[in-house]
Image 1 (cartoon, rainbow, N blue to C red):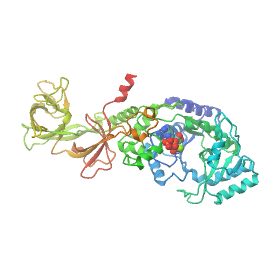
Image 2: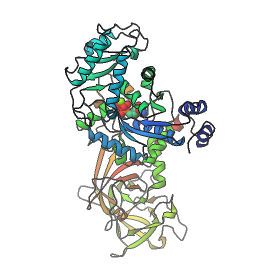
Image 3: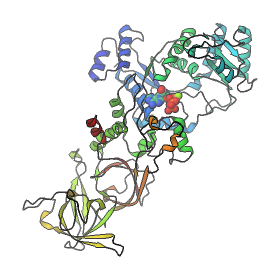
Length: 568
Ligand code: ATP
Ligand code: MG
């Protein structure tokens, strides 16, 4: 349903999602500025992979338009051929889809190069643009400061005819890189430095991924962006706060051209603790091999989070939780982990898996007997039914779940003590077997057949329930455990004279080569999520083979975020 001034407030109110952007849209709908239409766009530059910060922008653009019955375009802001690649375009398309959004139209700013050129010619004809022969350096020097006005270029008063001729020859490739630019002629003493004759075009003899060698002049961001919005009929051009000072220029260009005038709206970008979000730095991590690639599960990229096992819904929920504001801040990464846990708790089937095994032999269990225990696939969704877990004489439990000399508060297995093996039996540890070096190799235990299913008919209690796998049935798996990529929460904790690479956590990955998982994981496809009972959420990695599954730990079960909220 299309929003109208009458129903828009009601709609957003009903969705319970009021924020200042929706306030602006509601006001537009009330005044009829865009005829009740809402059209947004997500405009990534294809110079890297999308990260969790982009996810915020995606959710705001698509989410807002959706709620108002509007549309959202995906537009590649591909105006800088030196840094842009087809690989990034493909990855961005896949990531936006994965996040759960579908665009109205897919566009490229490069499709508008001819129109942008014609509009630049129009500005020259209107006497508000000129070709400048100063170098980039000289232009910078002449720009002035916040307290000092800029100096006009000696080329500022060229005739319209000369400007038209020079600009045409710039396009024709007559001049070398950096020798000339086209600038708007606005106000060299404006308090807003963006108004001091901003550059519209630079010469770059460079192959473009889409336009090839058709162009050797390329538009600057400020010149391309608003006009691209206008061409597409965008109503609300939502961007991050650093473009607030560019808004007057955005408005100036569309007004000079007399074309459709979208409203630029700025919000605070997302920053996350322990997370690098600048593409320049992320590229460095990839190119210098500090991580295994853009989709390394330690990366804050959407492809990394996906491989790590964070479901797209968790990312969308997380973005909702962070809200839309005008105030820059830093969000704790624990909040993202919380959102992942919430979603996975609901959706992930359970498995028993033993990461660091210790062998348990049930001395009184018949040699060749195998029993099948039936347990719920996911207690959060009992309607999914049950799974069968085989049980036999030789089992693995977690090394952590046994202590030979337990301290007072350790209630798990120890010599002489009885515990429950989840869904199976009570077992008691009778004897600890060690090798010559004194390492424990085996625990000899007895089970109580009367406790089948996990409860004692005589009502006796045990203080803990352990997970287990049957050694003969379990699948061998590789498990990759991840820690934070950085050793500090943010740039504020980094020495100014150090590089962010000095703060990479040397222990951000730990690989367990031989873990054991319940046979129900057999054949699981990459990206399948599980809860390993009592341990955490794990996701099948694409490195898995038919012989050996590889799992990534997505998050542990421990909710650090709730704890953080309590200590605040
Ligand atoms: P980076 O600084 O990471 O390179 P960018 O802003 O240059 O990011 P773009 O490809 O230009 O990357 O971004 C596309 C859109 O995503 C822009 O509208 C931008 O404002 C938004 N965006 C980028 N980073 C964030 C962030 N951390 N939080 C919210 N929105 C973001
Ligand atoms: Mg950018």
